[in-house]
Length: 465
Image 1 (cartoon, rainbow, N blue to C red):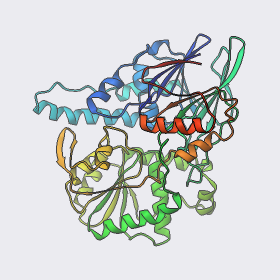
Image 2: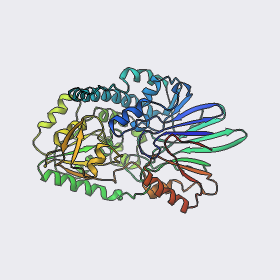
Image 3: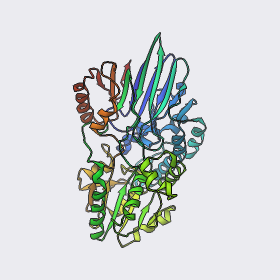
Image 4: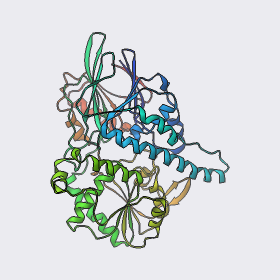
């Protein structure tokens, strides 16, 4: 069996792996690479293999860095089946249309600036018409029900605890008389987090492709999150400005809304308006509301069993139209805006940042991972001048970060994920979805636990197992 690593190899974005066994070619994930605009434009547009030769796509979850390039894969000739959990299929239906729409609109906006600069215009990576062609290829499954990709390849989805519908993959492969179990971790969630179940830990794997996003970091305990969030909101209100929270529309937005609902009910935060300015965030929340049975016991205990919607309360408003979004700029009293994307690489949050980055009264709070070369990373690292839509802006607002909101397991939690996979059985662990410093640190931690064969996949590398 051969596996090619064409995305999320020594980086945390653009997850994409091509496997070939028994004459079957399947891809695990097909995500958008996010980073420098022109580099991302080129990397996402071109595949290092012929999509028309791929038989299957198996999708771990709906986040755009794992699913966002599917319409382009179909545009380039893929006509196989896209296998995903039922919740992932529902989320992809809205996320891929949203991605196409944003690419069309962002490209239109950027091209106006490029025209003034005498530069050639960009073309959108794909359009909503391309999404129309991709959606009929999806096939939905529930957790823990094996299905076949043919020719000795069985796979099942296990709850990864990352976002609604997220999954780790466990393959059982029969190849040339040998049978082995291969796992793809997908994005591993954190135990004891609100909304999501704890990750379903794999057992007795022979090989594992494993994410390492926070392989060298320990998150602050989630028990401190509530008070930290209260302090940041209170400080922002006292400054007389607005608090802008760039957040992934799926997962992070719903967790924030849940937390703010809880703090509001407990009278621990000021009584100010809270806006979710993300059409995708709104539609994703509707999918969560349709799958309350998939949420954890805490949510059931606090809200669901009493018939209360955890994602709605009186001070919360979901913004729908562009006109409503623009009107938020005219609010001159303290308020909170939650808007996607989390890495500040697209969507309405870019316009909010563009209008507030130079405002000393404004606060921007990042609550998730910021990949290299993204606007979020530049701001988190304290750069004083940043580019938004190709134009330079001085940073005068207050920048805050909270890593405890992360939906990714930290170093200790990643090691715990392997607690039922004894080193004497594990033949090889291949590390992906991490920057080199995280991967190297985590590789050493694994070796210290007795996992001898640990490798860090390089971009475009093919590994035989």
